[in-house]
Image (tube, rainbow, N blue to C red; front, side, top):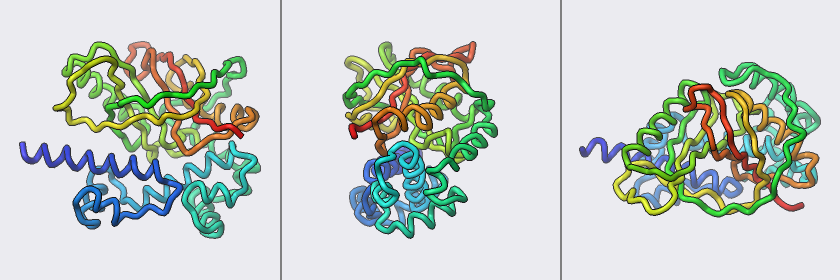
Amino acid sequence: MQKRDTYNKHVQIANDTMYYIYEYIDTDINIDDLALSFGISKFHLHKIFKEIMGINIYEIIKSTRLQKASNLLLTNKYSTITQIASMCGYSSQTSFIRAFKERFHQTPKEWRKGGYKEYSMNILKNSTLALYEKKDFENIEPKIIKSKARATYYIRQRGYLKTQVVKIWQKLQAWVYTNNINNYEEIGIYHDNPSITPHSECFYVAGIIPKGEVDLSNTSLPLFYTPEALYATFEIKGELGDVLRFIQWAYHDWLPNSGFETTTNPSYVIFKKNHFLSEDGKFEATYYLPIQYV
């Protein structure tokens, strides 16, 4: 029992660390203060995080900063490269450009001028979830909403590969049955944009949002709250790879021409029908794209 309790505690610490990084990515993240908040040493925090997430904390901070910046460069055309660097926690434009070029093999300026297109196309071509195919999403009309914070029990997965994602959704399904939860929503959260991030490196979150009164005081699943924020929502449906192609269209085509800009919040889907669990591999969902008024 002690071993399982320790493991669950480590999972919670690692997930809370990820949550903190995502929330404060625009700041100079202090690992010493973070370790102190958990009541452990910095060395112990690094060890726990690497054990659970398979990557060290400094690498995930760097990766998250660059993934957020790669999105903002596409969608926030009124923001300068220096402003975007600052929004993602870089104090120096020079260090940002150097890190961006190392990661994407092009400068932020080249990326912004269209270099992202071939990069994204290659990501989707090499995906096990989608064959690259142009889809027509132009007739899907968005609604602008302000979402409420919602308690979400979740499993975080490094790797957006079909076999991996199916397994975590199956575990969540078993968790729902075990806890006798009859009224709930299924949420898939894309902390890394899967249309411009190699899927072996993507962090994906699958979660359950219970509705009504449910006693989950003894659950070992970590908990977080979806952000209360402004979103453009789209009603979408299709087969396995269509979600990825839609995300690509939303960031590459819709947002730059929408009159809105995005934020560092992740996009997500609320499933009405989950293609990772349905027998026919089809889905119906509402896609939430974070936006801000310009």
